[in-house]
Image (tube, rainbow, N blue to C red; front, side, top):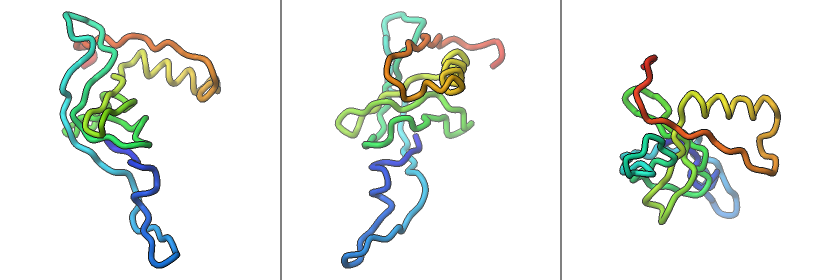
Length: 125
């Protein structure tokens, strides 16, 4: 997972009464997929449990396979800074997010139901 843990706080240092930027770019966190939810013979996965450190401002960070660079999901929550949750991505969810962005409804009130993600191998690979 790669994102901006604690926003810009980790990029600054103080010298006397002046604050300086001393680092740029996101923080890379490495971990493992620990579980899928629901777990009981489900074909549809709604959340991925990760054993990866999480911090404030990491929501929305990509969770990816480091060997291929494929984005597997988006970080959406953490618990006790040691466990994180991600929303799995597939073509249907990406299309939904693209449509929401094109309609200009991102960040507006109301809820958009996300389609379930089928964790089955696709014909396309």
